[in-house]
Amino acid sequence: MSWAGLAGSGVTTGDSPAESRRFGMSVGRVLVGDLTPPDAAAQALTDALDRAVEDLLVVRWPSAMVGLAGSVAASGRIILPADVLTYWEVPTDVLADGVLAGADAFRVESGAEHLDAGRAWVEAVVRSSFAEYGNHYSANPALDPELALAGYLEWAVSSFQTHPADALFLLDGSQPIGVATLSEDRTGGDLEVLLAGLVPGAQGRGTYAHLLRGVGLEARARGLGRVIISTQAHNVRVQRAWARSGLRPFAAVTTAHAIRPDSAAAAVVLGQRNR
Image 1 (cartoon, rainbow, N blue to C red):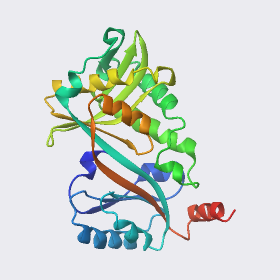
Image 2 (image 1 turned 120 degrees about the vertical axis):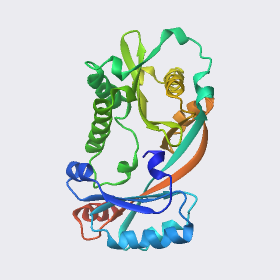
Image 3 (image 1 turned 120 degrees about the horizontal axis):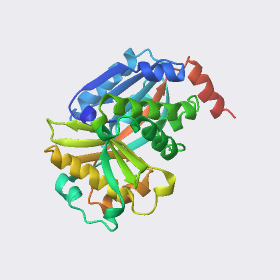
């Protein structure tokens, strides 16, 4: 979830056609902006949940608004705590000017330089690096984890095909070992990493820092002053890598799945609970 989509005030709702097609149920989104006054957020969130007709709602709110969990629970839906996203930031120059050992061994190149091979590269890196990743879909037994991975692939490939320059590849020689997909917020002066990963063989060797530095250099080239990235709170390993590269946490967002009790998804979840 991009930070640009979370920033602001008010409660927004919308359907999610791609997820609805993928999982075979109606899926909607409910989002509480980080600047929404807590009292107003509670009432607006309650109203949004009461109006929603989708089988599954993916509900997100700033984790600091702890009391909103009660508003979600009072909706009459089956509630599954799904994840907490942590958001990290770093000034562009701090990331771009990082001194890394073995810097000559790797290159970071734009997807615009690899239009022919880029799609296959994105698919290969994302499939291998996110194959068993614990995202918010993993909390819901009614959702096929293979379909969730297909969603990551679809998202990443679509991002590359739409804006090849918003994909960066980390290359070891001619071999792609990492990818980062980007989103530019010119108003906020931010370059956000929407998705980043390394193939398993490249992990645990300090390689990730080279990809991050490439993102910093890209942000500088675009005249953007801050780099943002996010992950699930349980993903401690990557957050330690971010800290070593100078990033610091600045926000957290809670996610829950709110399931309509008379839906097929609810039957699956209740079946799991009653075992």
